[in-house]
Image 1 (cartoon, one colour):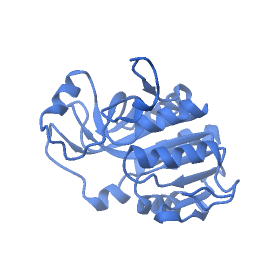
Image 2 (cartoon, rainbow, N blue to C red):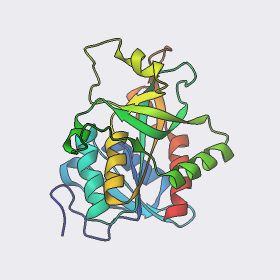
Image 3 (cartoon, rainbow, N blue to C red):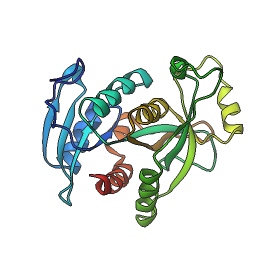
Image 4 (cartoon, helix red, strand yellow):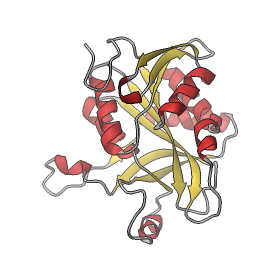
Length: 239
């Protein structure tokens, strides 16, 4: 049976799902990087596809939408209802440091958040840390280095706020070693932990808080090939 947010039949998704935010980016990835890709979900325009890599590994790609509530819904349903083993978020982020430049790639080793998401867990005042699956992270790092990619492992901020009222708050995160800001990884990692599954976020820097320059919407949609190749290379081990 389908879920409220996914009309794919059980078995339609592969064991590993690549998850960009943008439905059009998911379509482009399926058409560009997968063979015999089939559209398996269309609910709310959040398209999901399943196909095969050039090495014959079955893999899926599906959009998450924007923000933690959205990826929280889709990742939980994929993990629990569709028995997906691993989700690799492939998205864009804004650099918080001069060491990470436009088009560089960050493998999110851990994720912090300013979201209220972790408040649902009664931890008696404790703080819930969100970390990537180590084996998935290690494989992605290996693939990136073999390809000669400008990729680092780092701690990221998953924020609920794109246009922050406090224009200087990013500097406080940067002082704590946060490499960049995005909007989904924290919740993805927590859902993976809850479900006993694997998760990783691979992020391309589309803009920077410390340097000039920004990727255009067209570049964000179609110009992120290196990140996708790394994600597919890492995913193939777990298919």
